[in-house]
Structure formats: structure tokens, C-alpha cells
Amino acid sequence: MAFVVTEACVRCKYTDCVSVCPVDCFHEGPNFLVIDPDGCIDCGVCVPECPIGAIFDAADLPPDQLEFIEINARLATEWPVITDAREPLPDAETWAEVKDKREFLEETVAS
Image (cartoon, rainbow, N blue to C red; front, top):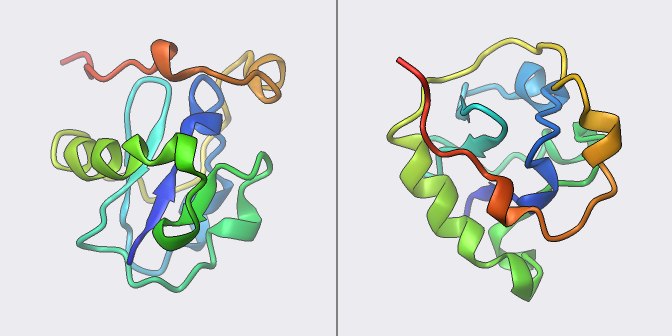
């Protein structure tokens, strides 16, 4: 099973995980990252790099985060690949500890 970016990433978008991914399977949206499950090689190097603990093996996903399996798979087909670390969103520290952020996930990338 692939690794999954969960709700904790919403409105933070730390990209420490991106720079260690050996297969470039991260995709970037306006305020969230996703992992392409078809590209992920299950190496897990991204997990310890996430400063807010937003990445899980799909087999170990908390029950309240299961919808993020589908969200990652779907948005990975719509969003562009990101291969280099960037600055997090300006107010990432404020949002890092906030729970229940699903409603703030922006799925549309501006063209």
C-alpha cells in the first residue's frame, strides 16, 4: 500500500517530504500535498521528514483519515508534480496544530 498525506497538511503544506522522495510522487495543490499511490514505492522516507506528522502508511491510517486515501489518489491525477522543497504556507505554524481542517482543503488549482 502507498503512503497517504492526511488532513494535518491542509493549510500548512510543508514540503520537507518532497525533497527526499526518490520517485517524485508528490503533487501540489493550493494548500495541500498528495501522494500518487501508483507512483509511491512504499519506501517511507517521507514520513519522518514531515514536521507535523501528516503522512501515514495507508495500512496504518487513523480511521478518521480514511477518506484521504481517495483524496490523494484523485488529486494526484489533477495536480502537478512537485519535486523540490519550498517554503510552507505563510501561516503554516498557526494551522499546524489545528484539527478538523478538511473543510479548508482547496481542490482547484488556479490556471
